Image (tube, rainbow, N blue to C red; front, top):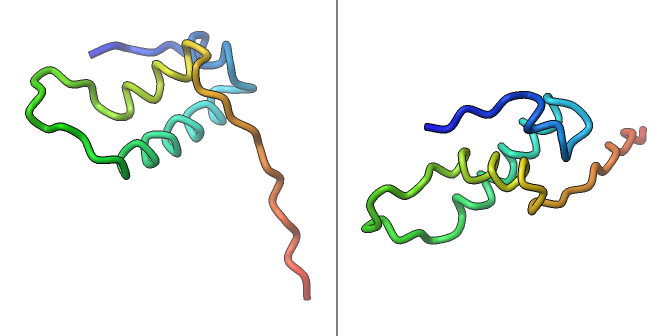
Length: 70
């Protein structure tokens, strides 16, 4: 299992908290796609998401929350 340091993950993100949120959201999206379960040694989705984020292949943008209207 690969260990990701905060410096690796924040190289392409603003801070480590945002990078973890982006990777978690991306792994949820990856989970929706069908996977071939017969392949042995396949990486976990969270590992793949963190690798894509630290490599810079995952692009994201932060959308500010809308203020609730009364």
